[in-house]
Length: 375
Ligand code: T4K
Image 1: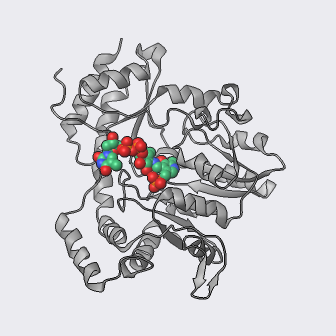
Image 2 (image 1 turned 90 degrees about the vertical axis):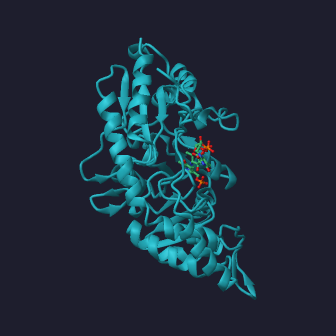
Image 3 (image 1 turned 180 degrees about the horizontal axis):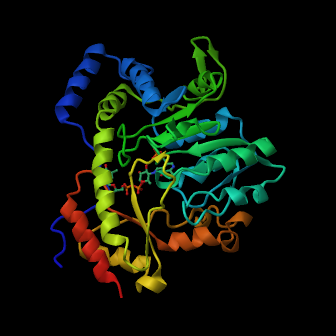
């Protein structure tokens, strides 16, 4: 098989028509209001609140700062139980808040934190659970809530991948105490860089908004050590435009998922994205497979390397596991024997190219290339 003539990346950003952006830029230029709670910002907060079906929402300049502020807003300290199978940002926000991340093993189907194992990791120092809806697949929110209630723990959901996901018609941001969404360029919905915190507590919104604005209450009072987490007007305007693109992009990805599933479901040694409950609305942001080397005859790393010979750049999200980072590997909870499922999946997982502009025939060819690797 011939390699692709151009590089096929794991994803490409969804781009609005440039004219739509320049029109909005003109509005911003005319207003001479570039950041600090301008009109675009206020409007986007409202529009997103409706889109995500959540009571309260605060915009941020990226998801990582948003998550840092979430920890501060809930006054977390001590230890927080989280997953090792996530992007670096998740445990790092704990460290930046002087909180010890405690890694809990993951569920072998959803690849999310194993809710059944959380209880055994709780100590007198535990203040919260920081769970991630990995690749947009919802966590076991019921079980996590039940454990948290029993021990008086807070719950933060890292919903960086879960924009627009719903359970039984309820926006995914309504679970736990706070959820964070990332609006990074590589996400289904983006503001180039950006993010948001959402929650259902009206008393929390003023605190979050102070924390993201240096703790400045007014010209005479600074009431807490805040940070600069503000989203500017240009990105807020792009975010408003992008809201019109989300469902179209999602539909294109559904079609590509279908082709991947048709082509790959009968290949022995490949496990496809988890099948989730019927009442879950997914966003189809990523396409993820697991490769069982013993059955497929090739390791994940061999497949990843060989794909490059065909100009296909897949990704190993999330390898290395956070528990293997040099800054966390000395933790007791990082020991491989405590995390058997995460360690297995970390060696098997591969993200295949997934973005609306990817032609269907390219997906078929990617599948044919993958099948040709089988021994
Ligand atoms: N929690 C979780 C669970 C997360 O996954 C993330 C971010 C966060 C928290 C933090 O949220 P933010 O602070 O980022 O809002 C990418 C994204 O940068 C990152 O946002 C995302 N997760 C992560 C899963 O993926 P990288 O290091 O893999 O990005 P990069 O630059 O290698 O891009 C991936 C591919 O996308 C490239 O191969 C080509 C394509 N691409 C990328 C960019 C930036 C483009 O075509 N154009 C572009 O402009 O982290």
